[in-house]
Length: 72
Image (cartoon, rainbow, N blue to C red):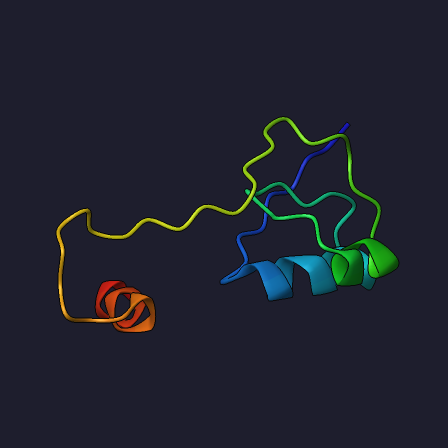
């Protein structure tokens, strides 16, 4: 069996390659979303990350959105 690896610049490109059957398998830390599950089949997830938001524990005058914008 011959194996050929190709590196894609982002998840969108990786999914496109698998969806178009250019590549047989895509391997990456990809979040499973309903939109993505509509176009490709996922294996069972090996890690359930969930959504987590971290903010500073210090009292401040800024809002949660300002704190998030500062991190991004």
